[in-house]
Amino acid sequence: MELSAELFEQTIRSFKGDGSSVKKQRRRHPRVGISCRLKIVPVESGVAGAEIEVRTRDISRKGIGIISSQSMTIGSRFVVRFPRADGTPSLAVVCTIRCCTRLSQGVFAIGADFEGIDKAKSAAA
Image (tube, rainbow, N blue to C red; front, side, top):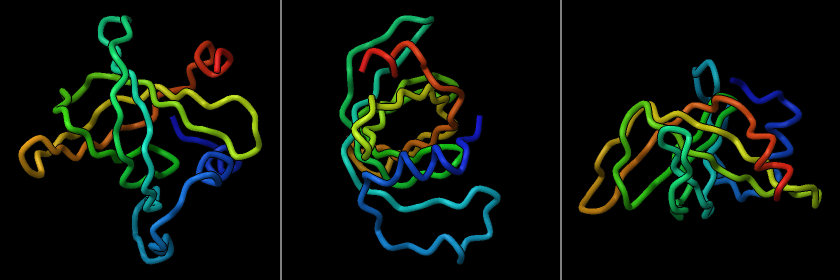
């Protein structure tokens, strides 16, 4: 899934960027450096787990990079809830983990692709 340009812009409007230039990247889906705390909910076999607080690294229209204190399995899923700047309910997005790299003891860099909007969790926010 790829966020529309409008939805992407609405989603990152409330975050603080790191000033990195998107134009310098040659990526198909350029990343924007974002540093904030978010909560994610791991989902295994359709069952939601306990919330985990993570820190964002970057975001693109296709996915998100996070820093977590927990290792995560490639192919597993989580739901991330993005606050909205305009006061509308937060946006809950289902993500699939594509990579997990240990940076140091208890610190993991995780890359995940957006899979779809969780309409039930977005409406409940």
